Image 1 (cartoon, rainbow, N blue to C red):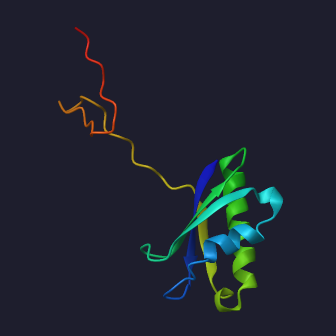
Image 2: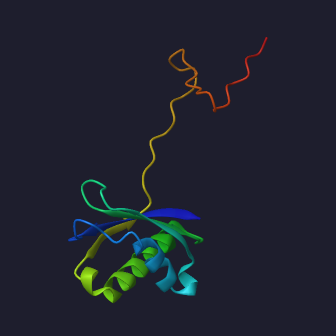
Length: 116
């Protein structure tokens, strides 16, 4: 499963709270859209978090973009909204434990086992 961020341009100030469910309901079965989260106030543009089952990243990005474009076109109030991009978000790597003398382990994160 991939998380794909679909970035929208020309979106109204408030996107409908039900937009994520609408997109998922109107996705084609072969697009395998599992869930859609609406981040209406993301900066610089509103963003949809689309969870897609796919074998490859490029396939997931294409499926997410297609499902969103098609669903937006079905809503007269949002038919002018465009998909700017659909891509997996880049994640910052976790710090190397112990590189700076701090294991960076929080209360719910496993700590490295120290040898004796």
